[in-house]
Length: 183
Image 1 (cartoon, rainbow, N blue to C red):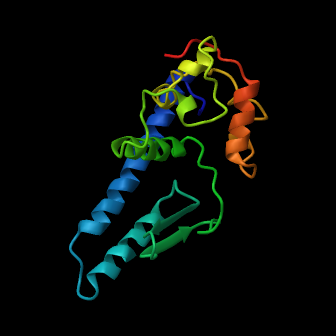
Image 2 (cartoon, helix red, strand yellow):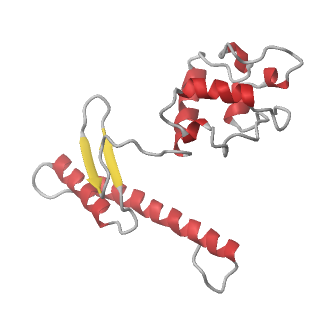
Image 3 (cartoon, rainbow, N blue to C red):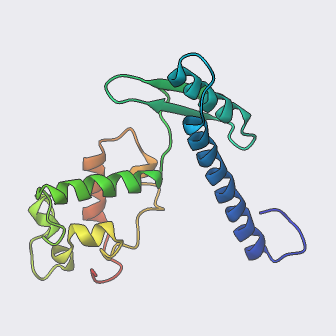
Protein backbone atom coordinates (compact mmCIF):
# COMPACT_ATOMS: atom_id res chain seq x y z
CA UNK A 1 0.00 0.00 0.00
CA UNK A 2 1.15 3.54 -0.67
CA UNK A 3 2.76 5.46 2.16
CA UNK A 4 1.00 8.47 3.59
CA UNK A 5 -0.45 9.93 6.75
CA UNK A 6 -3.23 7.32 6.99
CA UNK A 7 -2.74 4.06 8.95
CA UNK A 8 -1.54 1.14 6.79
CA UNK A 9 -4.83 -0.79 7.14
CA UNK A 10 -6.79 2.23 5.91
CA UNK A 11 -4.40 2.77 2.98
CA UNK A 12 -4.66 -0.91 2.01
CA UNK A 13 -8.44 -0.80 2.19
CA UNK A 14 -8.51 2.33 0.03
CA UNK A 15 -6.10 0.69 -2.42
CA UNK A 16 -8.38 -2.35 -2.70
CA UNK A 17 -11.41 -0.11 -3.10
CA UNK A 18 -9.63 1.83 -5.83
CA UNK A 19 -8.73 -1.38 -7.71
CA UNK A 20 -12.34 -2.56 -7.39
CA UNK A 21 -13.54 0.81 -8.66
CA UNK A 22 -11.26 0.54 -11.73
CA UNK A 23 -12.45 -3.01 -12.42
CA UNK A 24 -16.07 -1.82 -12.28
CA UNK A 25 -15.26 1.05 -14.65
CA UNK A 26 -13.66 -1.33 -17.15
CA UNK A 27 -16.65 -3.69 -16.95
CA UNK A 28 -19.06 -0.78 -17.37
CA UNK A 29 -17.05 0.65 -20.26
CA UNK A 30 -17.14 -2.70 -22.08
CA UNK A 31 -20.90 -2.99 -21.51
CA UNK A 32 -21.48 0.57 -22.72
CA UNK A 33 -19.32 -0.08 -25.77
CA UNK A 34 -21.49 -3.06 -26.66
CA UNK A 35 -24.88 -1.36 -26.27
CA UNK A 36 -24.29 2.15 -27.64
CA UNK A 37 -25.75 2.80 -31.08
CA UNK A 38 -23.27 2.30 -33.88
CA UNK A 39 -22.50 4.40 -36.91
CA UNK A 40 -23.06 3.15 -40.45
CA UNK A 41 -21.41 -0.14 -41.33
CA UNK A 42 -21.37 -3.54 -39.69
CA UNK A 43 -22.87 -2.94 -36.21
CA UNK A 44 -21.35 -6.10 -34.73
CA UNK A 45 -17.83 -5.29 -35.94
CA UNK A 46 -18.18 -1.71 -34.71
CA UNK A 47 -19.25 -2.97 -31.28
CA UNK A 48 -16.16 -5.18 -31.08
CA UNK A 49 -14.04 -2.25 -32.28
CA UNK A 50 -15.33 -0.23 -29.33
CA UNK A 51 -14.43 -3.09 -26.96
CA UNK A 52 -10.89 -3.10 -28.41
CA UNK A 53 -10.65 0.65 -27.90
CA UNK A 54 -11.87 0.46 -24.29
CA UNK A 55 -9.34 -2.28 -23.51
CA UNK A 56 -6.49 -0.41 -25.17
CA UNK A 57 -7.24 2.87 -23.38
CA UNK A 58 -7.32 1.43 -19.85
CA UNK A 59 -4.16 2.64 -18.07
CA UNK A 60 -4.42 0.14 -15.21
CA UNK A 61 -4.78 -2.98 -17.35
CA UNK A 62 -1.39 -3.80 -18.83
CA UNK A 63 -1.66 -7.45 -19.91
CA UNK A 64 -5.05 -8.83 -20.85
CA UNK A 65 -6.60 -11.10 -23.44
CA UNK A 66 -10.33 -11.32 -24.12
CA UNK A 67 -11.69 -14.38 -25.91
CA UNK A 68 -15.38 -14.69 -26.77
CA UNK A 69 -16.92 -17.85 -28.17
CA UNK A 70 -16.89 -21.51 -27.32
CA UNK A 71 -16.70 -23.78 -30.36
CA UNK A 72 -16.13 -20.85 -32.69
CA UNK A 73 -14.06 -17.80 -31.78
CA UNK A 74 -16.31 -14.74 -32.18
CA UNK A 75 -13.86 -12.15 -30.84
CA UNK A 76 -10.26 -12.05 -29.70
CA UNK A 77 -8.19 -9.09 -28.59
CA UNK A 78 -5.01 -8.80 -26.59
CA UNK A 79 -3.14 -5.99 -24.94
CA UNK A 80 0.41 -6.21 -23.68
CA UNK A 81 2.71 -9.21 -23.49
CA UNK A 82 0.08 -11.92 -23.34
CA UNK A 83 -1.32 -14.34 -25.88
CA UNK A 84 -4.48 -16.39 -26.28
CA UNK A 85 -2.59 -19.66 -25.78
CA UNK A 86 -0.53 -18.55 -22.79
CA UNK A 87 -1.26 -20.43 -19.55
CA UNK A 88 -2.39 -18.00 -16.86
CA UNK A 89 -2.27 -18.12 -13.09
CA UNK A 90 -5.95 -17.94 -12.18
CA UNK A 91 -5.66 -18.78 -8.47
CA UNK A 92 -8.86 -17.76 -6.67
CA UNK A 93 -10.62 -16.88 -9.92
CA UNK A 94 -11.23 -20.60 -10.37
CA UNK A 95 -13.41 -20.75 -7.22
CA UNK A 96 -16.39 -19.19 -8.97
CA UNK A 97 -16.06 -21.48 -12.00
CA UNK A 98 -15.69 -24.58 -9.84
CA UNK A 99 -18.65 -23.63 -7.62
CA UNK A 100 -20.78 -22.94 -10.70
CA UNK A 101 -19.94 -26.35 -12.18
CA UNK A 102 -20.63 -28.04 -8.82
CA UNK A 103 -24.05 -26.35 -8.63
CA UNK A 104 -24.83 -27.45 -12.20
CA UNK A 105 -24.00 -31.04 -11.22
CA UNK A 106 -26.19 -30.68 -8.12
CA UNK A 107 -29.09 -29.34 -10.22
CA UNK A 108 -28.77 -32.37 -12.52
CA UNK A 109 -28.68 -34.58 -9.39
CA UNK A 110 -25.22 -35.90 -10.28
CA UNK A 111 -23.78 -34.40 -7.09
CA UNK A 112 -25.46 -34.42 -3.68
CA UNK A 113 -23.94 -31.63 -1.60
CA UNK A 114 -24.87 -33.43 1.62
CA UNK A 115 -23.47 -36.90 0.87
CA UNK A 116 -20.03 -37.77 2.22
CA UNK A 117 -17.14 -37.06 -0.16
CA UNK A 118 -16.32 -40.78 0.04
CA UNK A 119 -19.32 -41.37 -2.25
CA UNK A 120 -17.34 -39.63 -5.00
CA UNK A 121 -13.67 -40.28 -4.17
CA UNK A 122 -12.67 -43.88 -3.51
CA UNK A 123 -9.66 -42.95 -1.37
CA UNK A 124 -11.70 -40.78 1.02
CA UNK A 125 -12.20 -42.27 4.48
CA UNK A 126 -15.41 -44.15 5.24
CA UNK A 127 -14.31 -44.94 8.81
CA UNK A 128 -16.83 -43.32 11.20
CA UNK A 129 -14.02 -42.75 13.71
CA UNK A 130 -12.22 -40.54 11.16
CA UNK A 131 -13.81 -37.03 11.14
CA UNK A 132 -12.90 -36.71 7.45
CA UNK A 133 -15.58 -39.33 6.70
CA UNK A 134 -18.20 -36.70 7.64
CA UNK A 135 -16.96 -34.09 5.14
CA UNK A 136 -19.45 -33.34 2.36
CA UNK A 137 -19.12 -31.37 -0.87
CA UNK A 138 -21.07 -28.61 0.90
CA UNK A 139 -18.33 -28.43 3.56
CA UNK A 140 -15.64 -28.21 0.89
CA UNK A 141 -17.45 -25.54 -1.15
CA UNK A 142 -18.19 -23.40 1.91
CA UNK A 143 -14.74 -23.72 3.53
CA UNK A 144 -16.14 -25.72 6.45
CA UNK A 145 -14.29 -29.00 5.85
CA UNK A 146 -11.93 -28.56 8.78
CA UNK A 147 -8.85 -28.32 6.57
CA UNK A 148 -6.80 -25.36 7.68
CA UNK A 149 -3.36 -26.32 6.43
CA UNK A 150 -1.76 -27.04 3.11
CA UNK A 151 -2.53 -24.14 0.81
CA UNK A 152 0.65 -22.34 1.76
CA UNK A 153 2.85 -25.41 1.72
CA UNK A 154 5.36 -25.65 -1.09
CA UNK A 155 3.88 -29.06 -1.89
CA UNK A 156 0.44 -27.59 -2.56
CA UNK A 157 -1.20 -28.67 -5.80
CA UNK A 158 -1.94 -25.12 -6.92
CA UNK A 159 1.77 -24.27 -6.77
CA UNK A 160 2.60 -27.16 -9.11
CA UNK A 161 0.13 -26.84 -12.00
CA UNK A 162 1.91 -29.28 -14.33
CA UNK A 163 1.39 -32.24 -12.00
CA UNK A 164 -1.61 -34.54 -12.18
CA UNK A 165 -3.98 -32.47 -10.06
CA UNK A 166 -6.14 -35.39 -8.85
CA UNK A 167 -3.10 -37.37 -7.71
CA UNK A 168 -1.73 -34.29 -5.97
CA UNK A 169 -5.03 -33.73 -4.11
CA UNK A 170 -5.06 -37.37 -2.99
CA UNK A 171 -1.46 -37.09 -1.78
CA UNK A 172 -2.32 -33.98 0.25
CA UNK A 173 -5.46 -35.66 1.62
CA UNK A 174 -3.33 -38.49 2.98
CA UNK A 175 -0.60 -36.16 4.32
CA UNK A 176 -2.54 -33.30 5.93
CA UNK A 177 -4.54 -33.59 9.15
CA UNK A 178 -7.75 -31.69 9.77
CA UNK A 179 -7.30 -28.51 11.76
CA UNK A 180 -10.90 -28.53 13.03
CA UNK A 181 -14.04 -30.65 13.01
CA UNK A 182 -16.01 -30.52 9.74
CA UNK A 183 -18.85 -28.01 9.73
